[in-house]
Length: 74
Image (cartoon, rainbow, N blue to C red; front, side):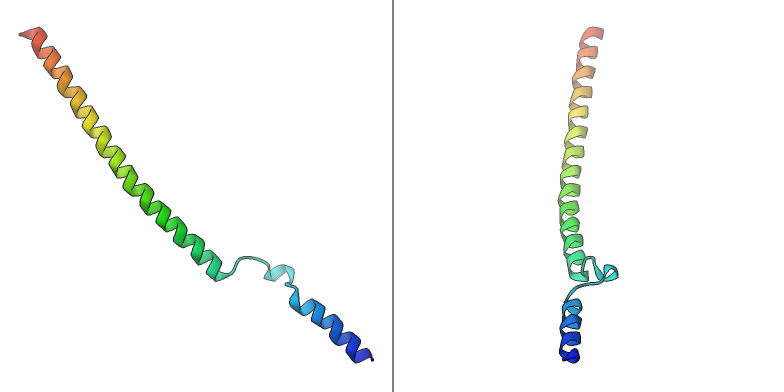
């Protein structure tokens, strides 16, 4: 009788995680890291496009300013 009672009690606690065992599994962490890597890759590609467009706009602005100043001088 006592043996069944003890086995029943042990079965309850066996399925529960202890406080030190709570957390994320390695698979979950790897999945999140993979998703972050993909997002970072897309962000860096978009960032280089933004920088290239900004440089082009600065060059166009400088060219128009030079043309305006040359017209004033000539």
